[in-house]
Amino acid sequence: MKRYTSIYKKYQIMEMINNKLKLEIPKICKVFEQFDIDYCLIGGASLPTYNLNRATEDVDFLVFVNDKQKLESLIGVYFKPQFPNSKRNLIWNDGKILVEFLYSGEVSGATGGLEFKKPSDLSEKTDGMKIITLPNLIQYKLSSGMYGRRTKDLSDVEELIKLNNLSNNYCETNNFREDFKRKWQECWLNAEFDKQNKRW
Figure 1 (cartoon, one colour):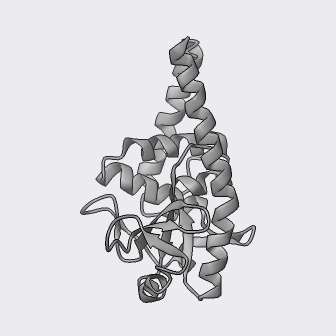
Figure 2 (cartoon, rainbow, N blue to C red):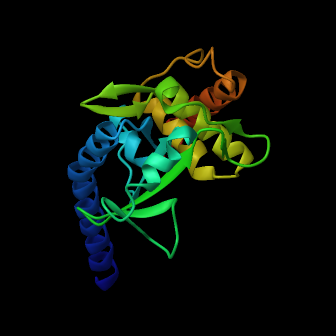
């Protein structure tokens, strides 16, 4: 009984964190808009936009590298370093939210992975926030999963395919179109296997 109680408490805590993120992320985006910073929301916090709800404890933003100094000027006013002298891992003062920044020109995954473009080239505005589009989110998750060996990102791609009922040519114009098609096929083969074997 104690084990189930601890699991329940864990999910309660994660739900509280997710609710907090919903309140604080728009505030962070407003600050970026105010200071004319080219940004977009990426990572786990962007997934609910595309019907995938996953617990996450921090928020990831992609920022245009030319706006790096603008962002750093906000440290001490709107953000504080999570670690001494950190300019990438910060804490949003208003809601004590952990925020991690990536910059255009960096790579998703490791060597050989896909380079991040300008946030404005990868995003659309939704509910007043610039959020990475679904095709771009998928290709960067494929890059992270394949080159950075982040299996969770590959699992996210499968879930996004199923939850949004995507066709196998959905990412036809992306760098990872052939990898997406393989993942699409694998996704539905796994789903059919689970159905036939009544796995729950």
